[in-house]
Image 1: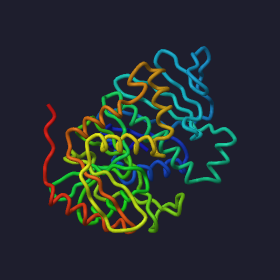
Image 2 (image 1 turned 135 degrees about the horizontal axis):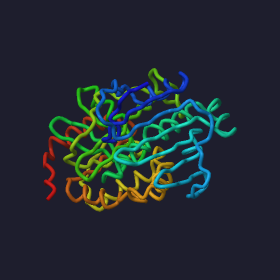
Image 3 (image 1 turned 45 degrees about the horizontal axis):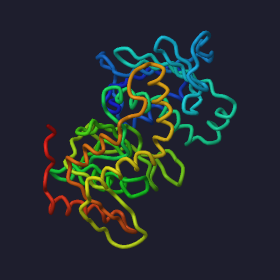
Length: 331
């Protein structure tokens, strides 16, 4: 395949030597962001191998069930329940070798629950390795999205189902830009997007769970510099409303929304296992510390959306116009 993708701020090179279905799966997972490999060094190199033989871990130290390490190299069997075995080597870059060797249960699930399989395979091959390598460089995952709103760049935070995707679609349809739909990484200042297809109700694209379909995220950029926090909340009915939010409450929402995110549910044991086996990166990302740094530095508001979340975009623009304060520069 030989294609490059900027993923979570890292240059990810993918070489897929397996049959066509996996190439299509991974191409879709890049959400239109793939570029031809240009020969420049990569940060994460993922090689999908055609072999069906297991990685040899004879004499290796067991880390936990299905995970082994030796001299800083880690092998994960059936990584994240995806059916792929991974061999990960962390040097000046992260090399990930993947082999499709699903246990019977995962093999059946891949056929019967195709949307679940696509999400798990993308996570194991394209998302979690880049998230972990970004974590080794001081960036933490967050369930949030940065988007331009005129001259401002709010970071939209909050649990899934609050209406963030609706706001993002409305914004990019008006010519704005965003770096992700659900998950990003940040050092407390710059936000880098995690590339994945948007999942929305209606429209074309691959059918996923909960009556949603996939589409590429238009207006996507690799990184943005937020100048304010906007925490989203939903209520059953009513019009959108805005109120100022204390820094402690904004940080709590950032942290809670991140740990509630289904997209990251399997990431925490993945990252902890790699940290233990390679001796690199934090066993647990300092999410709370980074969230508190952002919340202290950025002005924060809560945007409450009612039964018509699409009306929230106009309210968001009005908030920016009426509260144009900018963030303080980090010392």
